[in-house]
Length: 392
Image (cartoon, rainbow, N blue to C red; front, side, top):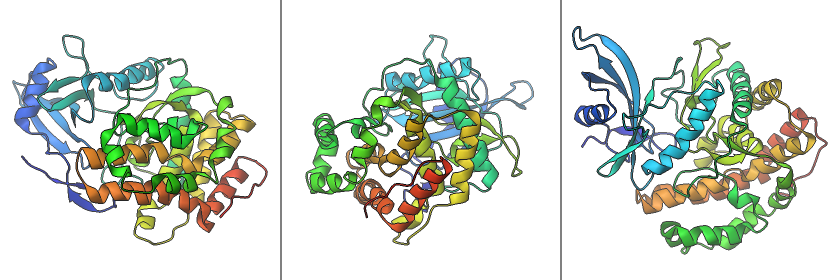
């Protein structure tokens, strides 16, 4: 098996968690999907949490490229076919609403996800556009202010397209981002319920004084956000909105978003949760902070994201307040999911500790410092909200 180098969780490169897709493996998947044609592997994704590749299907007579598809493979402990079908149902709704997402291909038997051995597979049409951030590590910043503005506008449009999708929240599984913990009146009790269902997470947390640590991390922010939750409409959302999950219409600074990729973290949350995630993912130098270097958010990119979003949709006064309120704690649910994945599936002590100390606790700690308070003040100003102090 070829375990190639992939992007690491610390912004550099490391051996991949999973082997690359092989040509023989791809041919078996294509045959199952009714796409039995000569094929070549054009490109392997460097993303670390799954394996994926662009596959060219060739004309049998001329050997010229006739079509390209994107094949993604997950370990069965990360995604089952039923769990992938939850994502695919959302994607089909979005396409029916003319959102720019790739088409999930069905097999002749009607399924759009399937398991072979220890792995689960999905096949998509290749998204339209230029992959400008193909080699960028996740959470890397936008290249241009205009990209931030275009990404914000695309997110607002996607939220319009998502309306009316009434599927229930996803089955609990590793590597999903949602607001269930932070929406609860007692988030520590909610974490207790979570660890009761996830033995690996319980095993990791038992060696940490997590109640005191997480309680202290949430304390300055949770009550303010929780008071606003009843006013937030539930909505299926992307939850991983960053530059490298978008394809672009051109390489210039004025490029628009042409395709939205990777709904692997999607779940039923709220538009506010998704917007806050986009701000957090794209404008704060988390990878630098992990190395102990203080960093300030890129406020110009924050402004661009918000201007683009508000040009595409509107937010009530309560929703605007909720964007600021949830920002410091928006990463909590996903960080717990990462701990479950790294401790229970890949057995990476380094990455599990990174998810707990740098992501779960470190993100909220950053928001209590001067850079974090400065970002919250800037977002408040952009949303035309009165100033509000945050305890340090």
